[in-house]
Image (cartoon, rainbow, N blue to C red; front, side, top):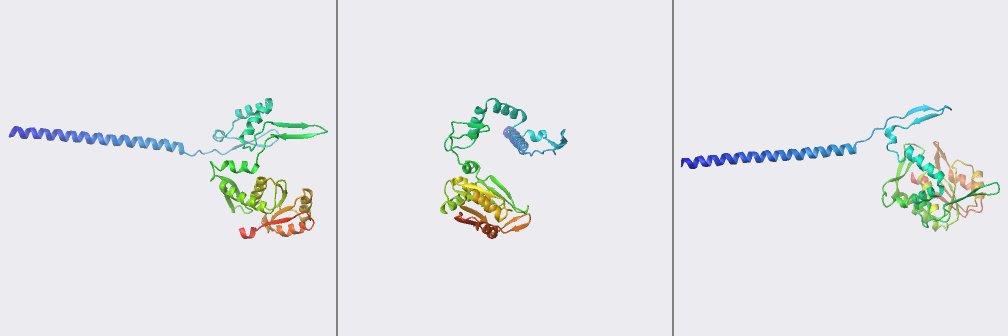
Length: 285
């Protein structure tokens, strides 16, 4: 009996020791896991870490013009450095057609070009043609080609007359608004080749209308928002425009400009204009 008890005690001691060892191995495994996780976190933190750009240093050239020296921290994040720029510039001079043939592929074409340029400068004739046997749409290149990958990316940062009045317009929102305007212009009878005069202040609708005109192939002519009725009338007549787009009013330099009233005075001198479209800026506000 005494021998059996001793054997049991020995077995129980061995079991305790093994349990302790097992616990130790568990704890050590947990520790290694924790250390690995902490290392991973540290690595990820290093990746996410923001770069603090140094303030630019100023110098002056021989003519007294101030020059801003580009800091190394900023230069390292530039798309093109000095050596790459010089390499590209040399290629554009030595192999001009080859250079522009490659650069032209950066944008989207409806019909791909085969001819690069046809340029002539003389007393008798000045001729400048680029990619002239190709076809593209400027509006589609500004908006559509960004929709697949970056629909929520900001396309336009608009700042009003009051700097506190700002708006970020995504590519998706820009596309929707431009398509609405384009369909609206088409419903008025505006077609490819028609001339549209735009008399607006710096509001988002100005960009929508410009891109909508390019989308449907209409030619747009922009008139400065501070011009007089006579100045507007002469510009409408010169470009033989049949459509005018303006707003009920606009703000420039803190002053309210009665755009519609000025446009009406101009239209008295322009019998060729078929229709006048008014952006209701007061309702937008």
